[in-house]
Amino acid sequence: MRRTTVILVALACVLAGCSSKKKAPVATSKSSTSSSSSPSTTVAPGISPLTGLPGTPATLDRPALIVKIDNAPKARPQAGINKADVVVEEMVEGGITRLASVFQSTDSPVEPVRSARSTDIAFASALHKPLFAYSGANPTFLALVHSAPLVDVGVDKNPSAYHRDGSRPMPYNLVSSTSALYSGASSDSKAPPALFAYGPPTGGTPAKGIDLVFADIVTTHVTYTWDGQGWKRVQNGTPHVDAAGVQVAPTNVVVQFTEYHDTGIRDRSNSPVPEGTLVGSGDAWFFTAGMVFKGHWSKSSASSVTTYTDASGKPMLLTPGRTWIELTPSNGKGSAAAL
Image (cartoon, rainbow, N blue to C red):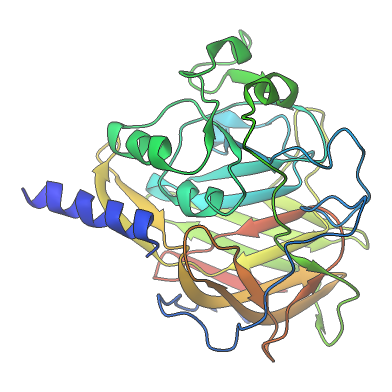
C-alpha cells in the first residue's frame, strides 16, 4: 500500500503539474513572481521555432519529434545528437543521464533509442502534440505516455520504423531515423512553439566553460568549453562525439536547476527511479556567446512553455542555434560551476 501511495503521488504531480563550484540552487514549486514575461510562441516567417534560424519549407510547419537517446557509457557514440534542435539532459536512476532529443528543422538517423521516463511528460506536453519515440517503459510510465498530449511513435506502436544494429550489444542498439518516425505523424499535430527568445544578449559575465555533476551510485561529470562558436562538450573526461566523430558543441547551454524526487519505482538493480520537477520555478544559468547570465525559469503547468528570464525578470535572449538544456539536480545530487 505504501508503494502504491508513493506511485500515485508521483503520478498526480506529473499530470497536474506539480558559480563558483557549489551545490546547485534549489528549485521551488511556487511560480516565480519575476517571470511575468515569456518568449513569444509566434516566430517570424521562415524561421525555425526551436532554433531561431532560417528553416526550409519542408520542415517549418511540421511537428516536433522527441527521441529518447541513451547516454550511458555503452550507448556512446550516439547518432543524431548533433542534429537535434534542442537536447534535454535529464538524470535517470543511479546518476546516469538520458537525452530527450528534439528534432524539427533537420533529419537524422537516431541511435540508441531507449525507454521513457516520467520527467519527459511535462516537457513534451508543451510542444503542441509532438511525436514521441522511445523503446518502451514500465507500466506506470507507459500509462503516462498514453494519457499525455503527444503522438506515440515508440517501438511498440510503430515497430516498422526501428531496427537493431548488429554491431552493438542490446539494449544499446535500437536504431531509427527521423524520416521513418515522421511517417507516424498525426493530422492534429502542429509546429511547436518557440521555447526561447532570441537576440543579442547583453550584460553577461565572460565564461570559459561550464562544469556540471550528476551524482548518485555513479557520477556523470560534464564540462563545456567555449571555442568561439559553441560550447564543446566533454563527458567523464572524454570528448563527447557523435557516431560521425563530431564533438558536441551547441550554440547555447541552459542550466536549469531542477529538484528530483523519488517516484517510488525501482529499476532492475533496485535503484530508485527519479523524476525531475519541471512545473514550478527555480534558478537558471544561461551560457551563450561566450558569456554566462544568471536568471530564473518558471513553468506554470505541464502544457505551458517554460519561461526563462534574466536577473532583472526580462526574457533571456539566446543566440540563434542549437540549445542543450541541462536539468541539473538541485537537491544534493548535483553541482554546477561557471569556469
